[in-house]
Structures are given as structure tokens and as C-alpha cells.
Image (tube, rainbow, N blue to C red; front, side, top):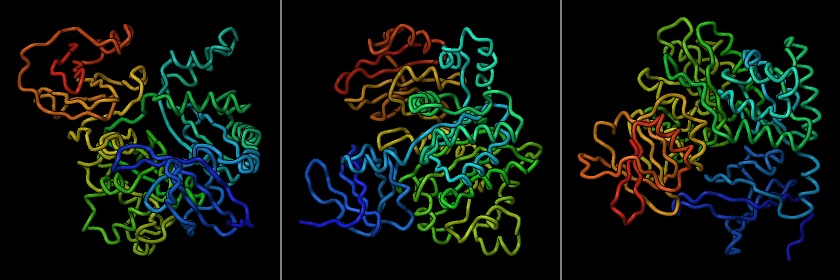
Length: 479
């Protein structure tokens, strides 16, 4: 029998098995004093990882319910406490809340992030978005009869809004004090900085701003992609980097979102550098060591924003950057060739695609082995067809709707293959060419669609093609 003489945090966790394409459940224990881990497969009771030293990039503050911890090439999502003792210790210590930054205050995001870092808040999620007026009104329904209803709706409707989920001991109370400080510092109007006043309200704000797929603020025009690396976030320098970019009068930040990568997707994202950039796999290790922040940076008065921002970032080699370009981002916030503060687009022709991938989670982040790999095609993996209303920002050519329990073969007209804006509701789809359709039941949509959704899809999509079953050859189109 093992005698444990140190604090242990125990969690129910899950991790995605890329080979089996499913989530596996684990019991994960973190030994606080010795900084060790032990992981056991919940279903089989087999030891997945014997008690071993925890990666140096992790610390005790990284272990909390809802966290994604990267352990030896695999992300583990901590779902719940495994025992009452851990729940008692961490449940009282760690608390989440959400800060909302309205349109007029978005320009101060760098300073806001810096203040939050100095006050020892941990960043769980960051996202910039556009919110439709209808959904803003639904969120604020309780205030409909008040004098401030219209002004509060206008603060978040059809204008950039940033939501930041934060973690800290007594987070809800402390964040309220931060909102007061920010409002005074930037002379903000009422509710331009907003946060939850209770645990329930924090959950409501998280659900509305961070779980519902609101439209992106990305423009995909005269843009470049910047990814702030995990070490910058861990070193509490995120706000400094964002503020430095905002100080550049030639560019502006038009979209941002925090995201995580596994090794496979990081290698895909960086594949053009393999064999070219020294220490390629060290760079991959840095990308997957924690959360990254993706930014779309748009040229303000420069026609070649990629070239301009590449110069502002500085050379990959930090030592060279510090010698030749001491005011560059990599010189000021980088350490070596892997921990060099930021990734930025190097080729103008790649800028739009990199922004698409990093900001929207498009082709690379949203796919598995059976998802399409079109050139310049948006692929959204959504879990609910009703979310379609939240993400359509411009007309699309084709919507693919499938059922989760079967694999499908969906045929697309060849002329649409390389230009279609595709929305895919389940990943189990194989895309092929359709040279000719002999028979189509025009206007028919399966029962999985509500009448309202049918009408919405009809207005926005050039066509919908559905393969009803994997062993059924009928194709139903709505055009």
C-alpha cells in the first residue's frame, strides 16, 4: 500500500485518442510537493503513466477543473474533482469569472491584459467577436423595461466585443474591483467594462460569449497572422506584446482568439518550415506547451502588411534580433529560436489562409482524417445545426449536414470544389467530385432540420447536399 505524505490534486480527466478517434477517460493525480504525476485509465484500471516527474512547463496553478494540461505529447482536459478532498481544497481556492470589453474600450486591450497579468489572474479563454442585435437583446432581456436597455444592446451589437475568461482565488470579487479600476483609468461609460457578480452569472456570460459561435471579426483582407506563443502568456507578458502591436500606427488588430494545439496540428500548421528552420521540433514543442493567442493584424496605411509586420516581429534568431533590431517583438520578449515570442506569416500569399486557420479554426484545426482539405475553403465543425445562425457572416455556396453515428460520402460539383464556402456539422465526411446528377429530390430536407432552419439555410446557401445513410445512394439537395 502506497503511503502518500504530500498534498495530491486528483481529477477526472479525458484525452482524445487520435488513432481511435475517441475520448478516453482517466484518473489523473498531481503530487504537489514533489511535482509528479500519475495517470490511470479509468475503464481498464491500467496505469497509463506511472508516477513520473511532471513537465517543467506545468505548475500547481495549472491544475483546475476545466484546464487543458499538456503532458508528454497529449492534452488532458480536467473534467471534475476525483475526490472530496481535492474539491474542498481547490474548489475554495480557484474561481472563474468572465470580463467583457465593449467596442469603445477594445482599443485598450493591451493595457487591460497587462493589468490582469500584474494582478495574477490566469487566462483561460480570450475571444473577439461580432454579436447580432437579436442575441444581444436576448442576453439583456431582464433589462428590457429599463432606460438603459437600448444603450446596453448597442454596446455589444454589431461591434467588436472581447470576452476574457479568468481564473483566480476569489476571482468574481477581485474582477469587480478590476472593472472599477479600468472604468476610472479609461473614463469608460457604464457597462463598457463588465463582469459577473455571481457564479451563476459567470456561467451565463461564459455560455453566451465563449460557447456560442458568434461571428468572427476577422476581415481576411490586407492581413497577416500573428500567434503569441505560450511562454509569453506564462511569463505574464501577453499584454505587453499586444500593446506593442497596438502602438504600431501602420497596423491594427482586428481579431483574436486563444487556442490550443496538439502535436499533429502544430506540425501541419508549421509544415512549410520543416527542414528549413533550425530546431523545428523545438518550435513545435513550444507551440503545444500551452495556450496560444492568435491575432489578425491588418495594414492601416501599408499595402504590404506581411512584410511590415515581419520586420516588426524581428528575425527568428533572438540573439540576432537583439543585436540588429533591439526594438522588435522577438528581441524584447523572446529567449531563443523556439521561445521567440511570436509566430508571424512570412509569405504574403499565406496570410489569409493562416488567419483563417488560426482565428476560425478552419481547415487544419477543425478537421480529422475524413474532413476535406480544400484550398481556401472554410470548414466549421459544429455540434448543433442551430448554431448555423451564429456564424454565417456572408453568403456561402454549400452546406453539408451529416449524422454523427455514420460516415458519409458527399459529392460536390467540380466547379465548386475549390471555391465553396463549406459548413460541415460532423467530421465523418468524405468529399468527392460530382460531375452530373441524374436525379435530385429538389427542396427536400430531412427531418433533422426544423422549419426555421430550412428557411435560414435556403436564404444563405447555394445548395445543401445530404447523404442519408452510409449504405444509401440517394442524395437530397435543397437549392
